[in-house]
Amino acid sequence: MRHLLTTTFCACALLTASLASAATLTIRIDDVRSGDGTLQVALYDSAGTFLKKSVGATGEKAVKGSTTVIVKDLPEGDYAYAIFHDANGNGKMDTNMMGMPTEDYAFSNNALGKMGPPKFGDARFTLSAAGLNTTVSLKN
Image 1 (spheres, rainbow, N blue to C red):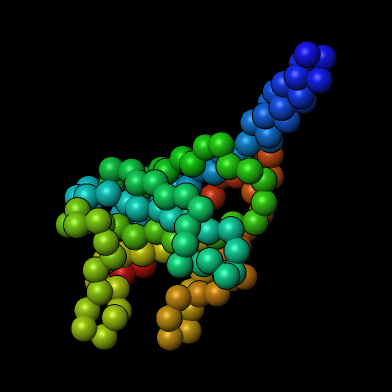
Image 2 (cartoon, rainbow, N blue to C red):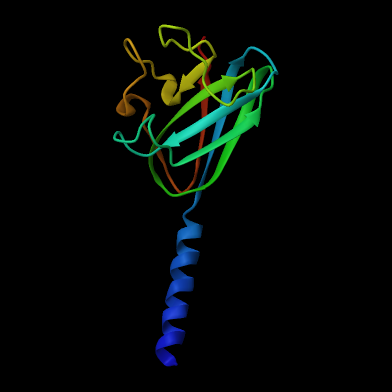
C-alpha cells in the first residue's frame, strides 16, 4: 500500500511539473488579404518531420489585415511552423500545376526557401517556459 501511495504521489508530481513548464505560442499573422476561410497553422519540432508530420495543428477564422493564433500547453523546445490561408475552406493548401502554392502562406521567422520551402533550421525558434509572441507576414 505504501508503495502504491508513493508511486501515485510521484506520478502526480511529474504531471504537475510537466504542466507547469507548458508554454504558450502566440502568432500574429499580418498581411491577411481577406476574411474568407481560416488560417491553418502546423507546428513541427525537428528537421526530420518538418512539413511531413506535425506535432500540433490549429486553425483560426481569418480576419482581414491581421489574425492572431494562440497555441497553448506546448513543452519547451525548438519548433518551426508553417501557415497557409485556406480562403476557400477546402482544408488543404491549393497549388497550381507546377506545385506552386496558390494560397497565401508563411513560415516562422518569415523564412523563405530557394526553389521550395525553407529548411527547418531557417524557420526554427526556441520556445521557453515564458512563452513566445511572434509575428509573421503572409506571402502570395
